[in-house]
Length: 434
Ligand code: KE4
Image (cartoon, rainbow, N blue to C red; front, side):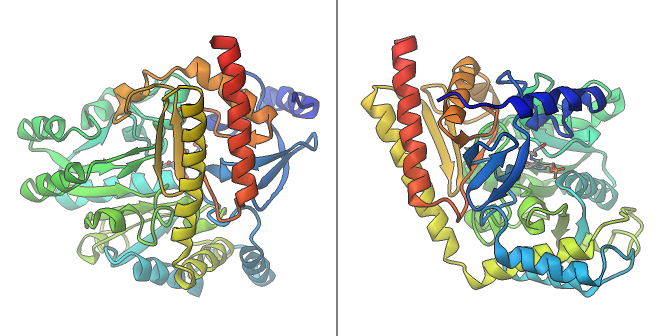
């Protein structure tokens, strides 16, 4: 049923006068689906409420940070307690060490951690470290993977860059483009071909489970093949786990693949919703970062005490409740099966991809294994689906090239209502496109 979103419309018109595109991040702009983005008033648990008072079941979850849903009491309490002591000091606090120790405890592949303020800062710093450590200049990334908005990554990038039809951004110099080599996801041969003809490669950076061209899981032998290629050619393997870190297992995708990358990038969940990123890895490599080494990286608010308190509360909860991943898997499987039953009932076979609580429905009836597959999806149909679900009270990422995030706060009733909304949407489709 159509909802009144008048105040969001007015606020969007106002915002567009003073902020480019009216948003501070393009992924929020609804550009790919048309119409105006919702302006949010508040959120709690699995629900998000817009400024017109409409309530939705939220599968964006701030693009991944809210593993427990919105405003979990134990995180709020940690933040309030930290705030009583102050907001930011620009000096070391114990919380930075504590969060680094928790990351190291939960992710065995990590020996040392540097905190930053976003996933972009984490990945940008990780490739600088790889270049400084190896003395080599080029990086390999994969079509459709998104590692944030540092120049080196805005080449065939996913997420908002792809959604807004600019996978390779203007403003990137020829020099940077020359140093970013592009391979094909789940295609080891495409990597071998590049490596055979280039001895100046510092690192390969990958989303081991891609969440920025929809959800695509890397094949086991693809990931183990990357590890082998890196070992044989003195190339560092970097896992970008900004999205998957603490999302798909307590030790992220590293834990699922049982592979040890040389560096891992974190974000989202480790801040519990506050701005935290981190890059981490073997001590032998990390100690080359200033001031213990010469490779420079800094940040006024890196390790902010309030953000650290939020991250510590998050990881301490994970550490004490490791069975939460079984619960997330159960919720994810429930939603996936519900969607599959609806598709079967209407004789449709759109491709569903899911890893734990990361979920994506592709509007294509063949398997999606890489960027070329993903961009063949029917984005027109996605837009119709998006708006129909929104009118049914389900808030999804406004792009075919994103992941939905299920949280511990999504109840069975929420998931059942989401499946019902999906059936109503498909039924209307069949009428309109039948
Ligand atoms: P941030 O700089 O946005 O904190 O992190 C960049 C980043 C790095 N690596 C991966 C795998 C990521 O998914 C991201 C950011 N994800 C997008 C959503 N797909 C953030 C949403 C946005 O850009 O507004």
